Length: 190
Figure 1 (cartoon, rainbow, N blue to C red):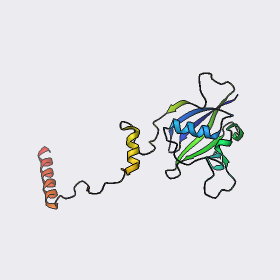
Figure 2: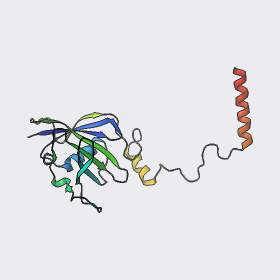
Figure 3: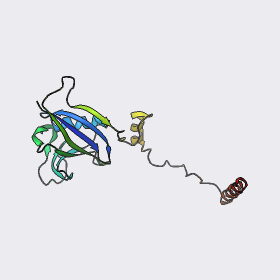
Figure 4: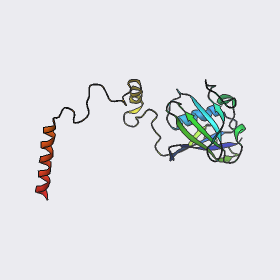
């Protein structure tokens, strides 16, 4: 069985990518789930693939489900479409969009075709990781996923009511006297 290896670039920074190995008989739905796992994204949002050319122009759509929008051609469904059926050339490209509100965009490029399956891998498999993945909800690292859930629920990215900006409440005179003191300090040093 043919094993296809795709390089999945984060569109905004091509130094960030994941390589995913998948069997040609597996579906775009399985590739969709592998990409989300590789980038540590949840599976709560809309998603779609577009068959693409060498210039990353979007062609035929392969979607998670049929969405309430106008299509030029009827989309194919990820669950029903095998990867191998959409490979047209040795460097086949796809554009993958996830979460239509945030518009996460990934460039998916076929980089290798092998005839031998690895008995050590469960396909689809993430076989290479380069760069730090973007955080789906704006926070990542020490605080972990629970903080991201809290941030999304309470929208902590916006300024909180009741808190002013730095410098609010200071009088102009206090600010002027601090500036004079600073200037005087600089002259003594020179």
